[in-house]
Image (cartoon, rainbow, N blue to C red; front, side, top):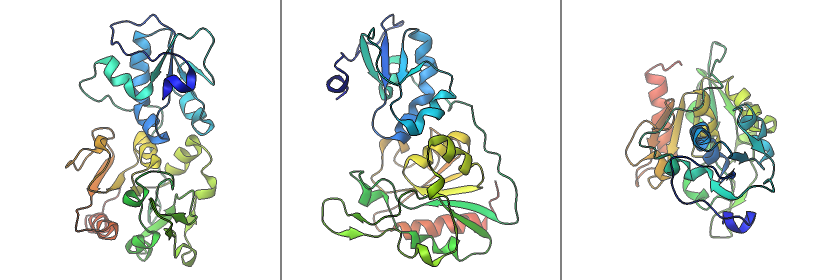
Length: 274
């Protein structure tokens, strides 16, 4: 709870203008905070004494480039707190604004289509077993010389399955393929954005890198479980949050392997070249 961590009251009342000194704090995961960063300039125009608390070193350079008031800890004069995901309510938002236009996707062209892949999210996520899949599910891309496959998986270690002691190796078979591995170069949001700018397409499960890629306009093919986060909607094939994200939803009788085959076929058959 925000109030427990920072020992200040959360502001709940929606107003036309906010005179209070408000510390806006992150909530949930990195991808969520990147997604909701678009609301910061709008809210700060109504709350001139508000500022953002950024305790995440990985995101420091990203939020610094937004040129917004930012602190590493709560100032002594601060009177209230506000979670970043509450900003749409306080703004009375009826439609989702565009992402902040700071970065642009400008990949260099080569003979092959450079496709980035991410097959698993954080091992600590409560629905990890529903949103993560296996490296070897991407074999259609790996075995096709039309593509240059690039891994954006930062953590390829084995992990425990959610709710059990079963050990899962989502990266099984990775060492059998001579593909470019960017995992070790992912040290911050900004370094990730720089690496994403080098690819043509990203195929990934629902994790923070989808938000980063969507922010700069990388064409994303997002793989979702049938029970996914509400912000991706229930039936939509495009995202209301990111123009470049294409949504592929797994039916109850499908696996992610089936879904990846559909994505591969669409890209290959339609000769999709960004």
